[in-house]
Length: 167
Image (cartoon, rainbow, N blue to C red):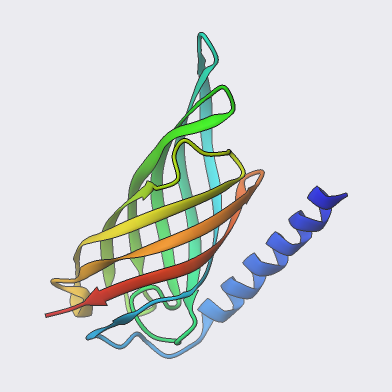
């Protein structure tokens, strides 16, 4: 029953985030901090290696909304790659690349990595590091942190912290 309830919450969050991302003001450049929410849908495949090692590889798409209604993660779409190694029910490593694009078409390249390893397979914490950007994000520096809960192919995340700066 708890799983069904969580699934409904995740679906509601995803719909709410998509709705908010559909129409709002564009991002402000400069510097600042970030908190907010994000939701993702993953698609990939898992391959089992003996003894008891599973490697999932694939991609995921999502959207994010910043609490302050500005910054590089506000009203942004995400396209990401990922790989996760799990042994004996514990995530040993997880990370990948993301392209984050705002409503104006400006984008950020970033690397993400799970920070609470070894850890469980349902809840996870990640850190993303901004590598480069286009348009108003040219020269971006900084990071963000997420705390996520997985439910099947969906992930509901809180953006727990972050700092960004554009020259």
